[in-house]
Length: 568
Image (cartoon, rainbow, N blue to C red; front, side, top):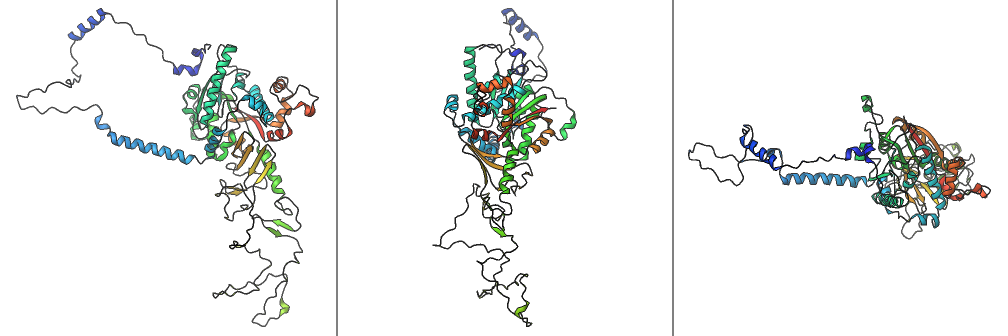
């Protein structure tokens, strides 16, 4: 392996110890030292203890106190071994319980999902995969972001990159081919299996590249299993050495006026940011890590689902259930669907020939006759059933909604219920709006998005205007063949943009995947890169302008967008 020239890298200085050379002691020097020690005056303040096996001294006088038992230094300040072990066990048990409690969070579930995704290899992904065109497009868009925004505005000798969701290390090759190859790449991910695979991929790349071409300073890469949302990345030694500002973001600490130097040139987060919007605490923890790790003028790049696409689909699907439409989108004259799935008459002529005739009220005690009945007035309230179980047959009120149907008795045919993908905690018969309706769903044969109508983390139904307030906790389930099958969270982009500004991050670039392809593929270098990566054909006269990505794959890709922020 070629030399990495660590002397010139600032993050290596803290790891090296300068070796101290010991001079060999000559016999003359030892003799002189012994002569000095014999002739020197003993230190009066030195505490000298008798040897452990020294025989007891005779006390002939009898007036001396018994010898005091010697104690090791600091013996009074320590606790017993048994008590110390008990305290340690209590601490470990508390940590275990805290970790077990966090297993219910979406981040931990996502880690379990990606740990279970098998690594099939590059050949399978490029030949047998059903979404090989989509994979090529995703990789090309990530390479486009790296090519456009990774080079620092001010030239630096050693560029540094922090990947806060490195996964299995699929972007290592993209960074090695960046306009300026990073001297240091730090990859973090919550999935430990993915980190092991990323480390193996890096070692294999280094072995293969070292045999083909030698570089003066190959990219150094380190990998860590970390929750990049819920914990501070400043605890990682290599990140501390590059530079991390623990006071980044809003709060009382900003008034300290501390000058921060150092930090990474680029922070990357590909297909992962949306998991942080499970709660405001996780979203702020993610931005605190991004801003704390970036140097002034550094770039924050990434890709994530486009909230505009989700908003448009939610509004469109809910509009089909507006007055005059049934939940399946079909028009029904004079019917308005209620939140619980029933329908309400809204036609001026509400006479129904299937209903029984309107009952007339009985004459009152004051001698009222039948001619005082008013069809515009609701029926008089009927008295409650008597305790003897007798009820009046005339208490039916056409203005009232139908009574809830009782559970079928044994042997009676059951009414089929509408299925929902919500968990029992989200979809009980609790009377909350939308609990009996199926989730909103859109997609195609390759991907599916299912959004439950009940949102337990925000305790609200889906908004008909498509504006998600508050911006955290709106869950949906995303399924992409061969790749993803996990819960995700909507990131209302304007809310995210405003939150990022609190951490000194200013939006520089934002485009949907379809727009990125249409604009950036016309660039000479990026267009040639698209041809090499199997995204676009050299024959522009081919159908769809030579695009090699299928229509369904492009529709799945349009669910995402790319972004770049600038650290002010």
